[in-house]
Length: 180
Image (cartoon, rainbow, N blue to C red; front, side, top):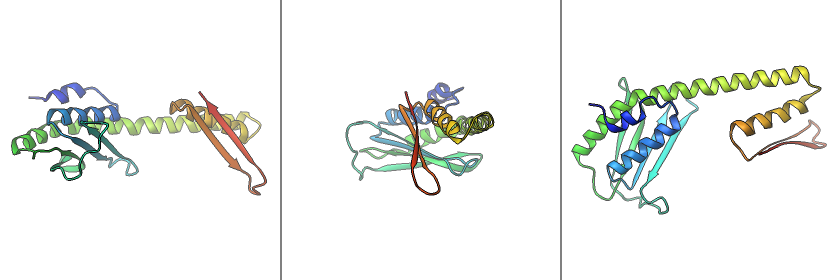
């Protein structure tokens, strides 16, 4: 039997959405004051994802709440954990239910991590090709930097992206800016 959370997330490839949904659903289902996921990515050791859910978003939760921490594992290897904190202790039946859900979630999270890496690699490769093209067809570095801030600003959905640089003599500085 597949849990409702796993059914809800089947086919979702956006890691951020998966983590946000997971902590929210587990937090609400198990009446947690705080639910947190910490996730490392063995394929990219530079990436650690942390996502929090708080029952009362506008309040700080007391740090002395009883907590339970359960590993997220895939094929016997731990790559993160889920931590729940609430006023009353989590029962052994609830811990077992959470373990079952987390066991079912392993493949979904793993596929989303792989998808995340592929998307970042594809973006980086495309970005570098575009910079190379601008450098080949432009008069200088200024055009390339102008393009860099525009691409980053658009991709990151930033309202403003700025790149400031100086020359080797520090005689002056140049600023390249993107405004949305």
